[in-house]
Image 1 (spheres, rainbow, N blue to C red):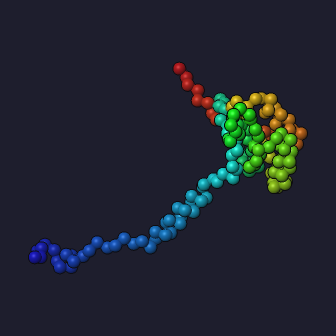
Image 2 (tube, helix red, strand yellow):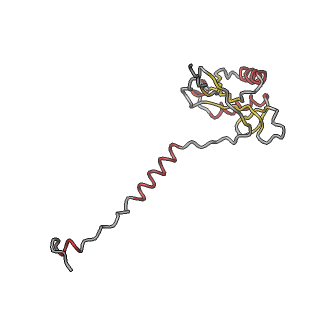
Image 3 (cartoon, rainbow, N blue to C red):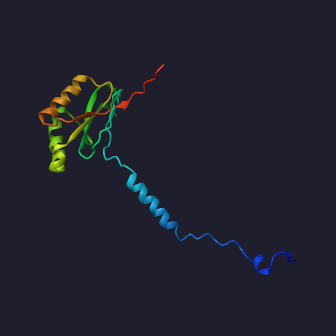
Length: 158
């Protein structure tokens, strides 16, 4: 039975299907966005470190020429008491810092070599003597811009 308020053409209309033609474009746009903004870690961590906290923490402005030195407990060590140094993807000694810096400088342009900053990411419990030895090795190789990684300490005022 026909409804007297609607004409025949209105009764036979169906909901149009969803146009899926632009869906692949949308998926590839989102995929491309995540590929651009995602930072892939290129260093396999062999040391475990807990970054110390500080009250006067500033972010480093130029990130183009930073070399990282990690100092902490070896991840697979049984006792977990000895501290070790990691340069790139390998555990190293203080004497290996010279070769590490030479290789880093060869990869950089001459402009970046002048602005090269070494970032020391050390565990909060690392003895200061080890940090001083690393600093001395860096000074011998004229890597004089040193950054220490830390997180900002939240100060609670009463």
